[in-house]
Length: 100
Image 1 (cartoon, rainbow, N blue to C red):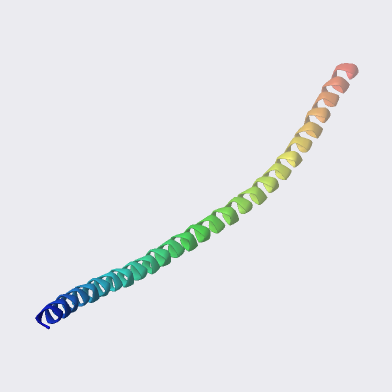
Image 2: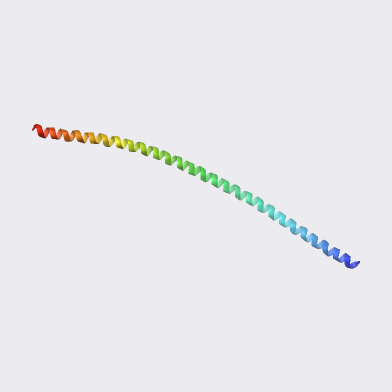
């Protein structure tokens, strides 16, 4: 009988130890889950910030391209005007030489 009681006492000690280990593992698992969620939230926030910055940069680049196209169109008008001026100037010199 004493042997059975000793075994029961040993089993109770082991069960208590196992319960404590399960409790520790559960606590660590809960901490891991909460840290994982926090890390995921930080990652989501970083990605959101990156996307917003990227979108803003793309809008700025599109606006710059529109401005560049407008500048190139103005430059084309300038060259056309300059060509007409040069042609008129050359024609005036030719006429001046011929009338002399």
